[in-house]
Length: 301
Image (tube, rainbow, N blue to C red; front, side):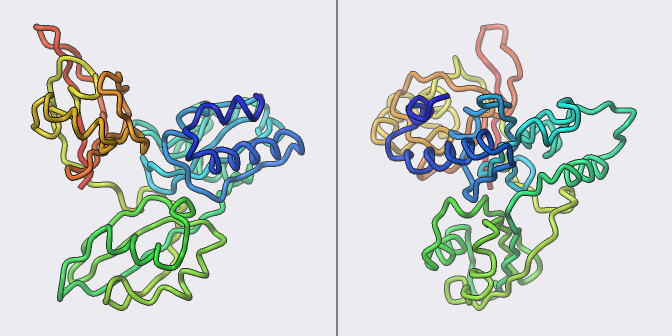
């Protein structure tokens, strides 16, 4: 694929990130080496890539299971055993975070998949940071952690998803970051808001031990998967009232503003409605007797 055709798939304001992504692909294709992105790409990028691009295999890793922001690797066939040992690396909700097309008789456990992955040198350039603060005196939220990190003049795309957990009197923020900025954050980040913080690097080999997203599940019934219909249902606003926020760019699909109220959404789409939260269309549950669609929606909490 030519670069100009690749860039045409993305909005103009994302051209810089799209161009860097294409450059990583070219390095893998031209020099037959594994090429990783330092940046963590949102679903509007990695969903478009599929399993291969121009004959080069594609792998993704966001550290957490079902992560939204993921680093991307372009892997030439010569790094894949017999060309049949590697399927994809997308950590979808219904799959392990590292997927391979391997005979079940040969591979019995997730740990063996991990070992196989590491033997093939598919180790992504990231570190998982655990940031701990005392929460006895006030409530600390996602925006407090992210705001303090961004205050170090770090680009958002060099950091992955942020998961917050409460443990006794502490608030813990877990965030994967590009390997090249991990030491800088550990050295320079002294507090979250006004609370002193402690930072450590967490081992990520055992995915099952890592923090997971928390959701509120809701089974909804909608006339169709049109954007205005879905937004109306999850926000409990009338379809007339959701037109205004959609047209004003307050609704994002896979992290991109979507102003077309009639856009048909797919299962797996991420919907962010400013002022209401972030949702994932998780599972199609079939139609009702009246022909309406039933969808399992997960709201991030």
